[in-house]
Image (cartoon, rainbow, N blue to C red):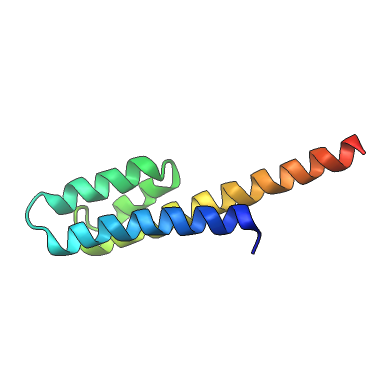
Length: 90
């Protein structure tokens, strides 16, 4: 796994796990707030997590997983774009 993708995977997965812990051990409105936080940081694909019941621990987990997959894909596309640009310059 390339370094930029590994870095994004580590950071966003840690971010998601932090909020998943808050949702799991919190009470009441924490679940809804955490779900919305992960949706906002994982836009646009994390909106798909609204298909799972909103404000539940599974919903938070789905939002975190979708956001992680999305940002890893963006990091990989950015890496490949940079490689392509460097190959064109040579």
